[in-house]
Length: 308
Ligand SMILES: Cc1cc2nc3c(=O)[nH]c(=O)nc-3n(C[C@H](O)[C@H](O)[C@H](O)COP(=O)(O)OP(=O)(O)OC[C@H]3O[C@@H](n4cnc5c(N)ncnc54)[C@H](O)[C@@H]3O)c2cc1C
Image (cartoon, protein in one colour):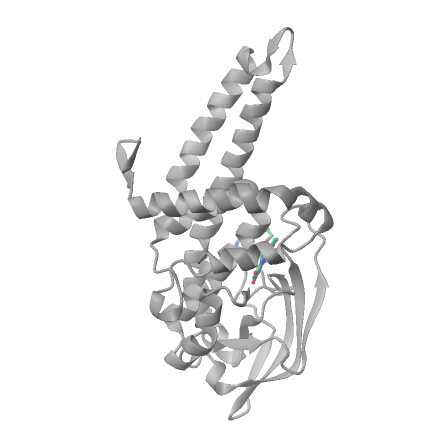
């Protein structure tokens, strides 16, 4: 059975496979994520068991080719799954988004065969999770101002510096770390190194106490004379900034799907409440102002769909 949606004159048809992926994600969100979501958020508890199950279902390496342990799915399937998970649990979906878009995609696209076998396969299967480490205290939007250094020591790089606000910072096993090797070359002197948890000198620092998505762990990471083997560099010398920017471009699709899921989840809750809550003798959804607001929310979320 095909589903057809017409919007702004465009026809979006979902394939049977895309519908099956969406429905599987919806069932998982309702049955597995929903029961504990409020407690996990309040207690800042990482959804460890739930993420393990998401991995077993193939949601952590959705677009990676089966050759490397992934689901071989298309971007629309990824967007639909992200939206469904985000409607219920935005913490779980940010873990999923980073692993799929910022770690697996970048590795499949730019890593060499040995790196893919060693790092991508377990990440795509969801056996471990990954983190993408670009931001620093003085390098957020201005990501070229990297102060973390990766000095070329011949057979290895010596990594020193601090990364901030890293999603999956405490729970990941594999970290893609951007660092400056040759400051004179500015952004063309930046490399991306694959760093493993447990490498001597790599310390996971404080966890952020956030306003939202509190089940997702966001950490500061410190690198003190970490010896990273040369074979852990992704691409040619100086490719790190291009790697980061290209990977972030794909990442925006995951984040847009997340925003869409959060908005439609909020809408569904508000709609249900407006039918249940009574004031002045009838459900508040029957009062003109509320009915107008809900219709406006539908219009806005449709615009979000176009934007995503
Ligand atoms: C929950 C969370 C998870 C995160 N996860 C990761 C992660 O996994 N990996 C990672 O590397 N980073 C991560 N980050 C960091 C994130 O990428 C940065 O917060 C982001 O790049 C913005 O940097 P900043 O916070 O330093 O803000 P700033 O760059 O200081 O920006 C502050 C404000 O100024 C505006 N601004 C900046 N430059 C301009 C300009 N040229 N013109 C107009 N306006 C401008 C910005 O839009 C913003 O509103 C995460 C952040 C959060 C909050």
